[in-house]
Amino acid sequence: MKAYITVLVVILLFEIKGIAQTESGYLPYSTSLLLNPAFAGHQKKSGFASTYFLEAETNNILNHELYLTYDKWSERLNGGTALYFYHGLGGKLNTNHTGIGYTYAPQFGFKAGALTVALNLNYSFYTKQWLVFLVDEIVDKRNAPYEPPGIHFMRYNMFIPRVGFLWSTTKLVTGISTTYRNRHHLGQMKNLYDPEPFQLIFHISPMLSGNQNGLLSKPYRSIPELITMVSRQKFFTRLGIRLERINNILALYLQNDFKNELPGVAGLYGVKFKSLNFNFTVGTTYAIKEKSLSPFGEINLSLIIPHKVLKKANPWAPTKKIF
Image 1 (cartoon, rainbow, N blue to C red):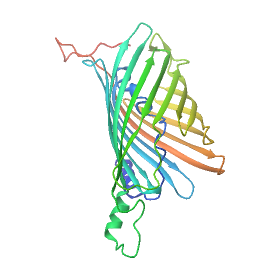
Image 2: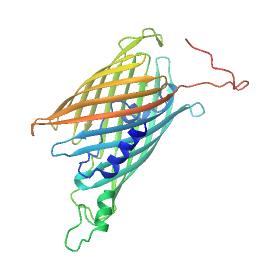
Image 3: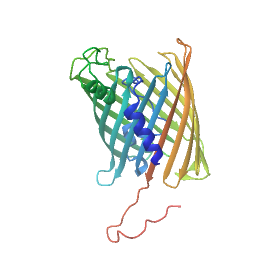
Image 4: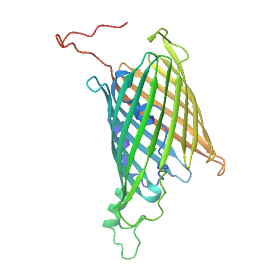
């Protein structure tokens, strides 16, 4: 664990040559909360997740993002809440971005299932890459120009609200989320990517086997997944199948960004240690126009806290087992 944290810190602080992903971000393989904010407190569980995504482009160019999330189910609010921390690097323009977020997701129960409605607010600020800015300040620049994006440290900030809807039953989980981005410039900017103002994500995951009447009847579950993201610059679809055993997860994915002609494949392997889950994803996309491969990977470490109902009369009494 210490080695994992050390690697993350080194990459985040000293990786200079990279390129940011589009402002729309990426679709996670392990953290559902990043896919749809309505997953906050899903199934009345609480948990902490650390997700790191890395993608290698051509010419030694990298994309990478770090996400820390904490979500909790609240009986008093009859819904979930979540906190987010984001950090990433756009090295082509020497730009770091850091952000925070909050979600409130009330749940409404029906005979057929449960509907969750979520409001997610995020704020991110973008600066000149920290190490590049430090070097520019130390080195004599009288005979050398400042590295892009120039002398300014602060670049711009962005307010990102999201709305999510989630419908869940014992046989099906499906939802939709929409995102809006509003950017505010803080300095003289050049060569900026225009953010995509709106983004729409749809996902559906029916359960083929393993559950009967809400209880796990077999030592495995098979869950197909379909995810579609639509924005001004992307029409992305990912189709996969997850096989979950008691202590292991195996998943395979086919994906394609139709607008940018970027098909790809990916595989996920996960290990469960009681409430601690570790997932590792590797894959690659193929740029048809450039005829080049771009491998990527995702590391996810999550701690799941099951929901317990404490009795008011005897709060120390153990919860009645349901199995």
